[in-house]
Length: 232
Image (cartoon, rainbow, N blue to C red; front, side):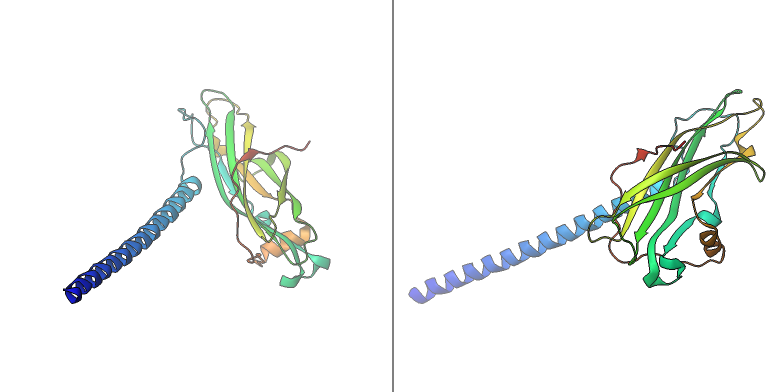
């Protein structure tokens, strides 16, 4: 009888062990599945935010299309070197305009009101002396393929978190107003250009297609979007 009871007890313990192992495995699979779903949702949200053509302004029946918004190639990247040496170990700070999201509204003979969001990828290299850096960029309104109507400069202060060499920052520009001669003047007659305030050497560096981007560290997306403070 004792031998039978012992066998029954062993079987019960074995069954319990198998059940616990199966439950643990199921939990791991569930956790992995949730992580994959969260990553997919985050990726989808970011793609919608930066690839969607939908205007961020309230929808109105415009008199025509919105102005073209684009990054000027010569000023789309920022590369600051120690003593002007173009080498990876001489990099102080870098920057790149990664994406634009824009919208407009106008009707009748009203001026065009625009809102633009700019996504920056900013880096801190081995020659950077501070964790805080104020980048400067500009926004220009032009007649399409013609003269500049207005140009304004903006400061973008950034603090790199300890141990991180890259940061993603979104800047929101509101209050861009473009006057129109009459109701027949559509937004397609204008362009909005955006770029870093670069030196002639930086502009030449960009034109030559050269590229230095800080890859060390882990990028941190900005949690909030705040309007820029315009410099007079």
